[in-house]
Image (cartoon, rainbow, N blue to C red; front, side, top):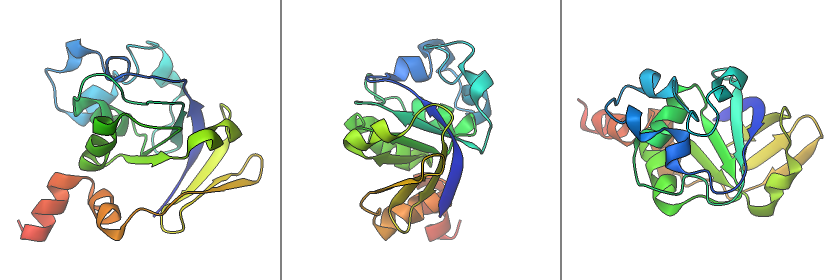
Length: 165
């Protein structure tokens, strides 16, 4: 699977309260949650998002804080399929896969991206290309089993498909 989009850069330690404030946790609807994505950090942040054509590039420890599944759902609901980060909080990283959000950890290479760069992510090859600069960054390709979960849209749709429901 390939993803392309314009980079939206964020700093270090973006916590789940910034991604989706607790007041919105009464919903599980992706579109509703997505309409409040990053509201805890910047109420106007969504104005930068082009659904289906934006990629988050973040610093260290993205998704720290509480273990709420709502955070990756909010990002997906906002139309952002991929988060590239220096590093992820452990629980957020696993929740991302379960909710159909692609998390890619690339360490210090995040410094190769700035706001507005055009990014292409090739999951099968394990390659991120900054189309604005021509710089390519390799990352370990995800195992086929994890790509299958993401391709299905998350763990629940993957299980339903496997069980033939």
